[in-house]
Structures are given as structure tokens and as C-alpha cells.
Length: 250
Image 1 (cartoon, rainbow, N blue to C red):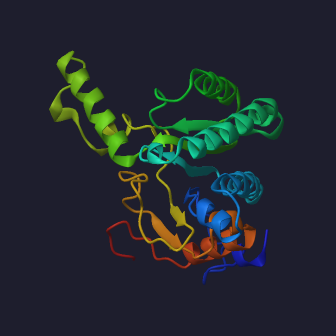
Image 2: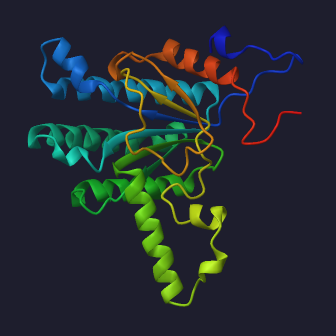
């Protein structure tokens, strides 16, 4: 851990790390294009960056890391590129099945998994089963796959409406906490810090409900170039933010 994220506040107390960091893994294609490589090479490099950053988050004491791996809109890309992303995911899942228990890493998928291949869905279920046997205090990586914030909200609304129609719920019951329990992220705290590499300044349909009071950090670094030092800078920027959640600091 670097000195940058071990700084103290004015009272001499250790500055709190974000409990939950979310990252939009953007810039893989541009990284490859600038090097005269196929876009698939960028996704491979980006997958290695995810592995390295997840390990670093675990080692410095972050409890949750959520990454935007494949959006509901990414199906518009070429079949070759989509196929390469899914092949990388399969490779990662096979490795995760073998190492999750040893490394005490919980793995969970967010998004509508129904369009994903049966083989990948089966591997995802296997990681879920392993996760259930690990301690809730272990580091958890959440991978957003075929995920979109609007799609997540619509799926939650439909399920709540179905429960109301079945007599299990009433519209009057609905509040923030109950609605959150219908989302893919149920049981996971909202992200404290959302990071977007690649110089883009937008959320791109990522965690739209959950980001209400998140802090944001944008960097020009493309995702394959994003490293531990860049994460340290993001955390240091977060530690300087005055988080009031709509209230007034006393």
C-alpha cells in the first residue's frame, strides 16, 4: 500500500478507504488500435488489468469491487469481438473456480444472464455456489455481464409488479430499501467511488440507481494502462471529498 492512501485526517485518524469501488473498464479497443493491434488484443490486456487491480483492491482492504465488463448495448459490436470477450470470460471463470476458495475471493455476476451461453451460465452458477461457502467478510468482485442500469431497474419494477399482482406486496410498501432488494445488487452496499478511465465523462448506463451518492473519478488513462498508482490517485481524491449525503456537515 502506498503512502498516498494511508494519509491521516486533521484529527489524526486514518482516512477511511472506500468500502465499495466500481469501475467502468473503458478503452480496451482504443488501446489496441493505437498499437496497431486487433481490438481483441485490447480486451485481453484489459482482462489482465482487471485481475491485477482486483488483487490490489483485496490486498489494501477494499471489500467490494464492481466492474462493467459487458453492457446490454455491447451486443452491437462485431461477432468476433463479442466472441473474444466471452472466451476471455470463460478463461477467467475456469481459473476462478480453481482459486476462489484458496484466495478467499467471492465472485458474483450482475445483469441479465439469459442471453449468455449455457456453458458460461453454468460456470457462473458454480462460482455463486463457491461464494456461498466463503465468509461474507471476504473480498467480493462483482462482474456486470449483459448489464444495463435501465434494464436492471425495469426488471426490478416488473418483478415488484408481479409480486403485487400475486398479492405478495402492495404498492404502498415500496420504499428505497424495498426497491433495492429487487435489484441485482441486493445485499451489496452502493459504490462509494466510481472510476471511469479513458477520458470519457459519462456513466454509460452503469449502476444508475446505486450511484445516487457515489463519488466520481475520471482519468485519461485507458483501462489496459490503468495501474495501482492510478487507483491510489483515485482513492486519494476520494479521501478529500466532503461526503454529506444531502445533509450539512456538523
